[in-house]
Image (cartoon, rainbow, N blue to C red; front, side, top):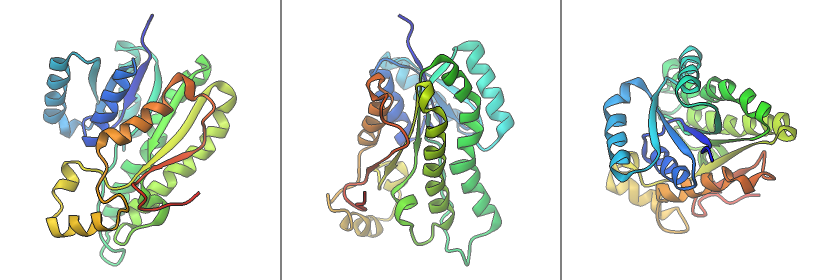
Length: 248
């Protein structure tokens, strides 16, 4: 039986690589997307995956560029086939108060964290609806739900992720394609490990569970949403934040 194909943008980062491993474990053939500037890190990840014998490959593309995403999609169709599961995981931050934020800071985050959902999903959604099966999962953030000081750009983009999710879910529900989002809280990655210890301690003190998440805990939820049996879950947002922000 031919494996289903999954694409994970931002797939060589901390959360992204955990998602790739989770989907490979669930039987997907996985493509880890990476920005061309990350090629060295991507090749290092690929070597690790190959050594571990998991079915994960890498694909280059700039999610902030529609033209780059078109080229990436064409390469995937030519070399790998049809994408059945798409995880929009690529993201950046440019944290500053609005008073100090530049237009470039604003646009960079909106382009990578929100516009990328259109740029990438647009390439694959017709193939999913035509086939009668698809899974789209986009990574939002707890700060897209509650807002965060110094993150007007990031909070706006991540709130937009779920607006996109709810609308597209309605467009594809009758075609066997589910569209959902996942909102992590603080996750223990290279990025958060670089936070000064005193600041990190302050963050953890606000989390009822008293710790940051492991990337695998986020990946687990994404894996569930990409499962064949998750066909009745669509248009929803699942929070994975250790109780940092609780709502319904």
